[in-house]
Length: 337
Image 1 (cartoon, one colour):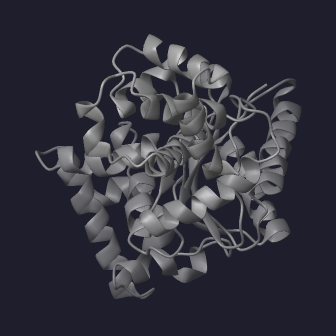
Image 2 (tube, helix red, strand yellow):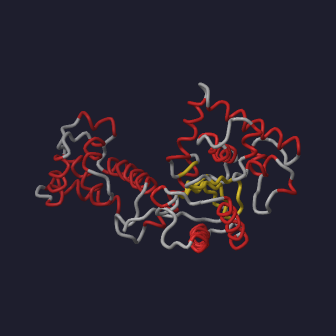
């Protein structure tokens, strides 16, 4: 069955989300919530994880997590498996508690600005869900978030919760003044949600809710190398997800550029040539053989008209019935030799 690839490396940072099976609650009461935090604390001891922020919602949780060692998969298997066993034992149940696989958004660990962005998104979950008012006292009273620990004294903070990275990214220190300033900024963001500026906040958070990685071009290239290592040696279709689609499309774009260069064409020439130009056909054949992009994508990228033209062109190059087609086939084949 196709699955999402899990990318792991020393020092990786993730925004993790896991929901209850069929959207059902994963906590029945505060004792369950405390039990998950206890299991998370044990997981941090076992794995060396650093938790930068968290929130427990009725049917899901969010964690901003750093893994000094590349052990996300093993750690999450233990965390969710152990909590499920203890939850089922307490409530005399059996079976799955969580819905499928947890979601992991990979975050550039070298880009400090992402830490306050994601932590604020996590801390404001209760406000967005109507579980806490958009004012400081109300948010502090929501016990099942790391926000109260951020705002309170160090002595009341669990050892596994690390606030320094988020505060430092905002030029704040872990001091009464720094924690007060952080609280004011979170309250300000909560109030913005209700106004016109909330649209901009939601835009920034869209990448957190729907994305699979958060970072710039250098991080994208690093992640692509990790994906390549995971995908190589597996059959096409073994892995799915937005990261895999993005990787395949980017690989196709690179191969397209190399193929066009091999036949002496520039992208701006393509619309000027006939749809069945033999050089276009050869490049289409190259990409169909070595990528998973669809005919519709190739048709648009090569200006070949209807996608049926792509299928017919690939067949012609396969057969290479003329010297001209054979010559262009040989030219593009050198790209991957």
